[in-house]
Amino acid sequence: SQQTEQEVGQQLLQEMSPKVQEVLQELISTEGIGLLLQRGSVIHADAGYSITAKVTDKLNQAFTE
Image (cartoon, rainbow, N blue to C red):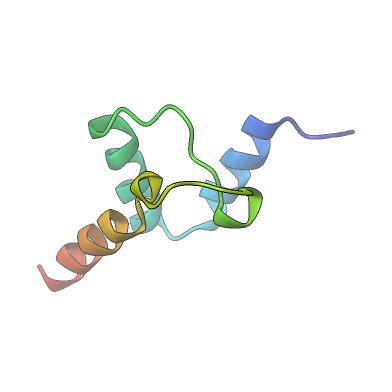
């Protein structure tokens, strides 16, 4: 059976480290993100849509505390 996009997204989150999951969930909530795509799944996106720097900053903060 084919998985829905939401199921695939949930599976990807589960495979990530718990800290990455936590940071992503926090950013999704605080930034009001309604759609989160993997870079490889996107044909084009303006740089302003990328949350990579925010995720990296939050992970760096978490691991230096």
